[in-house]
Image (tube, rainbow, N blue to C red; front, top):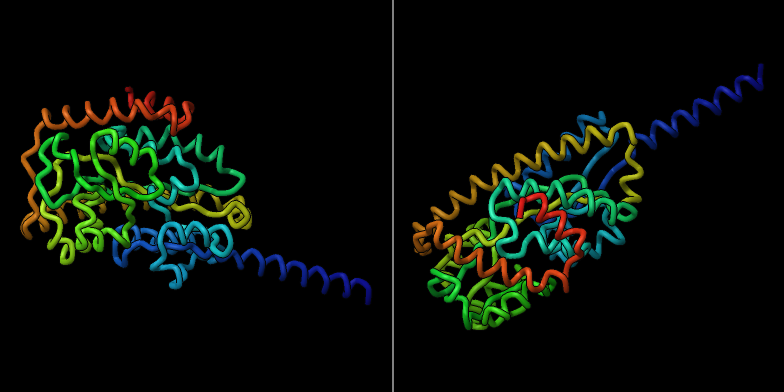
Length: 328
């Protein structure tokens, strides 16, 4: 009888420890999304949904210590201290450079093409990165435009511009240079300083980003292209070692919730982008009239130029899958 009691006590302790461990999956996700932006509000919704779905067994926390980190810093911390991160295109491209292909000018031209391209790209990326990361969900966050301190009505207006390009986007740098643009290495933290110093005339950026800081940029940025250059998007990724701690039975529901909210993020970003452009226009930003003929000129220029660099920078497997998906 005494031995039976000991066994029962031991089993109850094991059960208690197992239950405790099942409830102890806390994921520290790094995000530098601006407070109250679609991404910030969206990932917080995902955290709440994951807690609800798992009945508290999967918790997501966002360390305040990384809120002002650059994409490069987030990636470094993802390797050592964070369980996951919210990365934009520039951060995802550091992990797999083929991601940058999706943000090259005129590769993707509308929302339908973006959805098709992501559907083709994700299986490839998940297979490649599967031993290191789980790509949980992807969301579009508007469209990249050219912003400048002078008119940008046609591709010819790019010539001799000093344009800021993310230091990690080597292929984009080469494309721009081949078109006569003088590129300047820049990131989100340095663009305003370089505009103010006269080192930069233009940048490749999102209206959501510029609009959020319009009170500062309105002094140095006067023009924006009507032409949508490329999609701006991001993803929630989790380290493989951390994702493996999440109960398998919960993963499908967690992914589905994240994907649903990411679609909402994309819709809200589109709405805010339109509102932001309208507000910046009222505040003095000039956007030239835009027609299909203009789109054809921009797309023809960029498509031929990008295709000339594709083989040197991106895998054939990836580019072929994307082009087939969008019917090009």
